[in-house]
Length: 531
Image: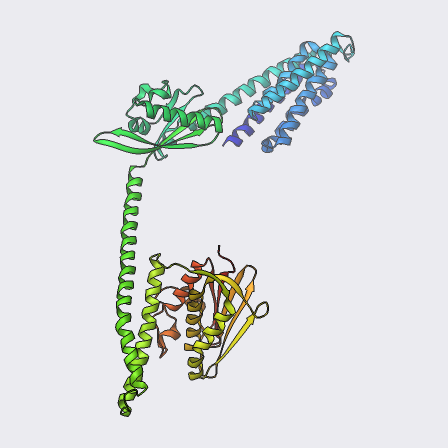
C-alpha cells in the first residue's frame, strides 16, 4: 500500500505540471495564434515530468529517485540560465517537492542540492560571470517565465495534495478499529514526548484507564512507582536501541491480579507502540505443563528405581540356581539319569538367560535414572575386542558361525581413554545379537580402528537383516525387529538400547545400517579422549 501511494503521488504531481504546460500552449495559440516557436521550450520543460511518469512504477528504487531529482534540478538550472535567475529560481522548489513523495531522507538531500545549486548560480550572477542566455524573442521569454512560475505552483499543489492523501491514508490504517481489534491484546501509541496518542478499548480495560488518558504522559499509566519506572525504562530502551523490548507486569483487575507482557516497539516516525498481551492463561498452562512434567519425571524415576531394586534382588537367587545346576551338570556328586541331566542343562541355560536379561534391565535403569557413572581409564581397546570375541567364540562355534577379528591400529593397539567395562558390555551385546540372528554357516566380523578423533567399534554379520523402518525404532527400549520376535533365542529388546545409551554417555553415538536378508552393520563411535 505504501509503494502504491508513492506511485500515485508521483503521477499526480507530474500530471499537474504537464497539464499546466499544455494549458499554456493552448492559451498562447488562442491569444496570438503563434505557438510553433514555443514547442521546443515546452518539450524541454516536459522532460522531467514525462520521465517521472515513466519511472513511477519503479520509483522505490534508489537509482530512479536520483534520476528524477537531478532532472528537476537540471530544468531549474537551465531556466535560470536562459530566462534569468529571478523569478526562475522558484523552479528549484520542484526537486524537493518531488522528493517529498519518496523517503524523508530524500527531501533533505534534494533541499541541500537545490540550495547549493541556486546559491552558486546567484553568486555567479552577482559577479557578472554570465548575463543570462536570454532568447532574442521577447514572446518566448514572456511565455517561458509565466509558464514556469505557474507550472511550479501547480506542481507544488499536486505534491502537497499527494502527500496529504498519503498521510491521511496512513492515519486511517493506524487508527482503523477493524485492524486494531484484530490484534490480540491492547495497543497504545506514545509520541516522542512519551504522551499517549492512541489507545484501544482493550488496552484501556487492561490498564483500568479511560478515554481521558489520551494526551497524558506514559508515567501516569501506573500508580505504582516500580511499575511506572519499569514501563518508562522499556520505552526509552526501545527508542534508544531501535528494537523491541518486553517485560512482564502484574495488572490489577476485579478480584485480584493478572499477568501481562508489555512490548515496546519503535516506529519509523519516532513513536513507540505498546502491545499489552494478557499472559495469565498462558502462564497457567506453562505451570500446568511443568507440574505434569515433574510428575512424569517422578514416575519415571520411581519406575527406574523399582526395576533396579527388583533386578538386584533377583540376581542372588538366580546365581544360586545357576551354581547348583552347574554342580548337577558336572556330576559333582555322582551320575544323573539322562532325563534329569537334560533338565539340569535347561535350568542352567534358562537361569543364565534370565540373569543376562536382568543385567540389561539393571544397567538401563541406572542409565535412565542418571546413576550410571563411567569409570574412565587409559587402556588398549584392541585387548577388549579380542577378549570379548574370545568370550563369545564358544557360542559362535556352537551355532556353526565363523567369527573373525580385525584390528587396524598402530602396532595392533587402539589406545583410548574410556570405561573398559562399558566398552566390553557394548561389544558383548553387539556380538550376541549378531550371533543370535546369523544362520549356520554365516560369518560375524568384529573390528576396531580410529576415525578422526573417535574409536570406531564395528560388528558386521550376514544374518537376517532389518528394513529401514525397523532401524528407525530398533534402538528404543523393549523394541525388537521381526527377526528377533520369531527367533528361538528371543531377548528383551534392551541390547541395542543399552549400547546406544552407553555410547552417548561417552559423548559418542551408535550407527546402524542393514538390508533385509543380507545382514547388519553396527558401528559405535567413542571419543579417543575424555571430553
